[in-house]
Length: 280
Image 1 (cartoon, one colour):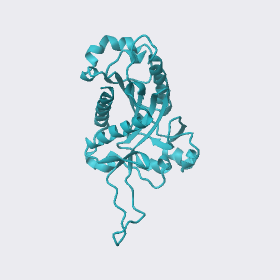
Image 2 (cartoon, rainbow, N blue to C red; image 1 turned 180 degrees about the horizontal axis):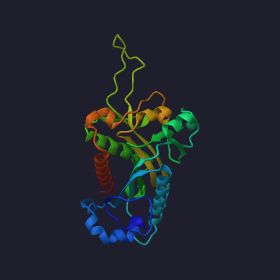
Image 3 (cartoon, rainbow, N blue to C red; image 1 turned 120 degrees about the vertical axis):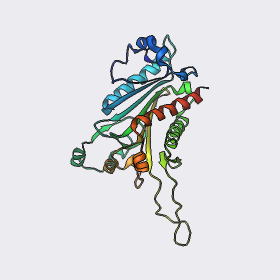
């Protein structure tokens, strides 16, 4: 199994030939494993580059099955896999939640004009958008090995993103009323007399989350807007939250926006740190 022989790796590998990989990694593991393997982290990190949504979904399902099967295999399984991808062509994904499809507000012609596809998905949540300039991270993790259940796992993902953004000088936070990571401090709602009022603008969302867990192995994950085309979010009601804006690192930082390659490196480091804390 792919999960049984690997330490912490970062490389680019197209979506193919997952099977048979274990032996080739084992032959070169001494040169590929960094110091985090010594801390007990067995995590395969794969940068898929630009990939269609359907292909990445098929890969996730295959890896999730492998991680589950590794529990009863002859060699010890690792924590799992971390997939990094930008979805090309851009796609709107719709869950099975009742009413989710109504949150696609664009017409079929508008979707064609924008070059945006629509796909059904089996993750949690509602409707969201994926496209170039957005870093999508799919952790395929054995939550039993990490001692996590769904609530703790979601909080771990949020903390990883918040810490990643802090490294770039972007203040971010959770919202107790909505899953995700949001930026900036919300302006206190006051009227002309200094009294609390309604109609204030809430902080915008920079990262959306949606997961699926089977036998306590996760799939799907998070979507962090880096240089995303934010106009495409006008095609939907993002996550079904009417009136909640979206933003990106580019929107927040302008010319100081980091390159996608750097964002990938930092978020992988944060995942490594977060997982190490769970396994110690």
